[in-house]
Image (cartoon, rainbow, N blue to C red; front, top):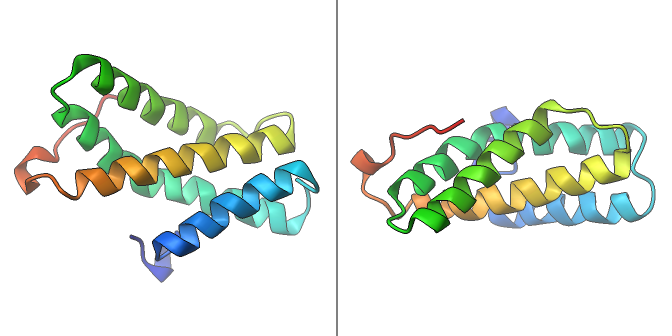
Length: 121
């Protein structure tokens, strides 16, 4: 799913743990060094998974489904670039974006390699 060099979780379990940790921190202490490091990891995960999620969107036959996935990818990019005013809200948005993108990226892995060229954002 990722490599240790990118700082992106290397397993689905690691990714799920980061998403859950972000949601937990958002309910409690969404600031500080640990929360900042988690935000950075989640942003890197968005950068890593967005292209595959975009490719997945491009191959969807249903135009409404394609629109939903494409919108999610664009939203994830926007969330990753915006530091946000509220740290708790920002952590929740990053966590949910990563969760969705990882699911779409996993679905994209089942496509034929030549179907993976896309990019709506």
